[in-house]
Length: 584
Image (cartoon, rainbow, N blue to C red; front, side, top):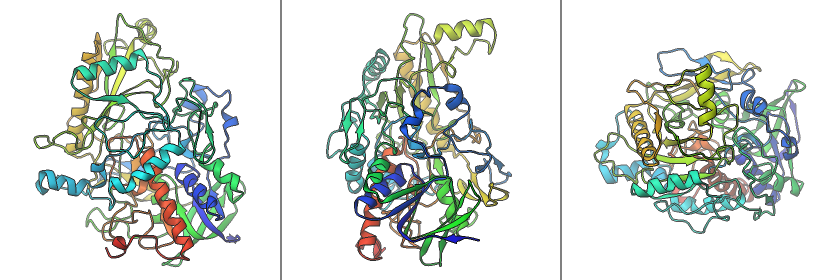
């Protein structure tokens, strides 16, 4: 039997960046908030002395427990989807702070082109440039409208960086200067400048100096220990939800975070959300938490799964093209959009690769978005090329030239020789939506509580493969200019298909944003068209993926959504959309 609890102003799914931002803004405005977090309670003190590759990079202690809840995936609508059960193939966030705790900290803004991609493409190239089967669309908002929220997130998260020479306009500089420059970074910068490109330092949430944000939270200066991705920062030098927005909300006394709370569905009457129904996984008890507004602030898979379970909105049907929920799934896929490029090996140069930080490096934006003229290219959107000095931890880093055997004496010799003599350049590319790449409920597999798993279908289009090829070729060009003696260059084949791996947290869609309920699930305040007191916030609202890391853009839209939530509550239930959106 479901036990009904006392009503609060807002109930939120997930305690990551999105849920934390919503909680901080709502509680500062005087509202009472409950966050339901399926993972365990975590604090910075838990990460002291935990630079343990076996525990975090091999056994994935901070990641989702895939034996309890996962996704199924397939690379064709004609195939049966299979569950993803190994964290090697799905590094999805869990516990207090979510993926915002174990992220690298790369903090790019997305481009004006991204938010108006359909209209800008047609304006520059004509409708015939849009590939058959593409479902790309504008977001219903412009870069200029979202820019103040970009600035707000960057100041909350202590972003350290320098302006992109070919990037979008900014209303203010970064709150902190860029991170340290190393010989590795200088080599990349020199080579790209020699080729006529415009390098700049990667904006980073690994703070370059001790900084206090506008809410009064202090982020310490980074010590370049190399344990960022997959790790919580024991020094408090990587901005995360625990040390910023959740801490701010806690101070108000108006937020409660309930851990081990697995949300099953949204309670609603068809027109209004009443609250969230969840299971306490430590006792097995089921509860309903009523609230005036309900916020789905989970990862893409969580938000989409909850909408489908709760029968909110019309599910997307790829055969007819009708429906919205589950539509336009996109992402940075490891064998196409990221982790591919060129690795150079140097005989006479040594680098201190053991030091670094998640957002430390240099990038070029010359081929990002629509910065390059695509008139004579067989793809739209672009790719961002960067060298990132993450810091090479000893277990996972033993790159050797292609002609080295995979084991034995020579492998060991080259592993030691090239540990500090290799650099990797990668090209992270955009991925545009197509009608056959989407999410729905799996007809066979269920989670530990008996709910159907979310099924993900991913089909690569020809233009996605061509874009990836171009990015890898650019990496090879730059690495050659850097003077590498040998190179391992990834090959993107014409028949490349999705390999069922979800290495990044860079996935989008399912409850996409737009200016009209005819082609979107939420408005530009992340508010459901079909249920005005339900906000679905995060990457799930993005109609496509850009070629940059998403966290700053997700944070910006979370701040805008929080503004809409507060306006909604202040007005006693009036819809938070603008007059333009009301008349759409």
